[in-house]
Length: 175
Image (cartoon, rainbow, N blue to C red; front, side, top):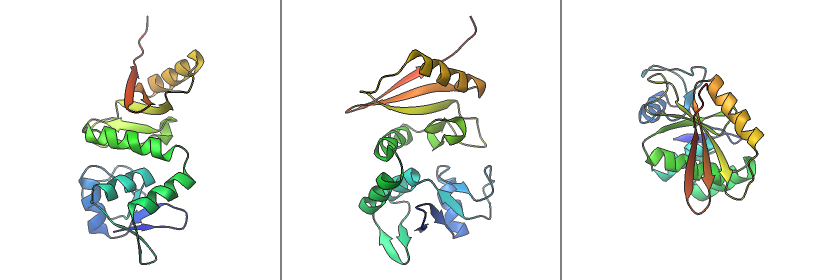
């Protein structure tokens, strides 16, 4: 059971539940332990996009002050609190369905870091930035994103959203 805190963060306090959720697909991040072992002893902090996905997959339930919070309410809170929440959720869900492990990409300046196996097993080979198909993208933005991705040794992927999601991967090499 995850608890929705007043600042709209979500946390699983029970250590056994935290381990189960984390070890079932590298969901969340144990408090104070960004690279945990299987038997960590910390509550698990969930990103709102992850939490919505886990509720949709029936892997967790969310409550606040003993009141159950369903998918609709969780989505509404995400939309109010975070920019592009629905787009992030669509891309997150799509990447998870494709078998990737998806984590917040804030430390890389993008929407997601994407692993083939998981944190602590491999390094995230991809960083993903979400873009609406109607948005314009300048050459300087592509170069900026490419430099960032190259600096951290990752491929930069644009997730372009329309009715469907298209992925455009940029790889960089020295000429």
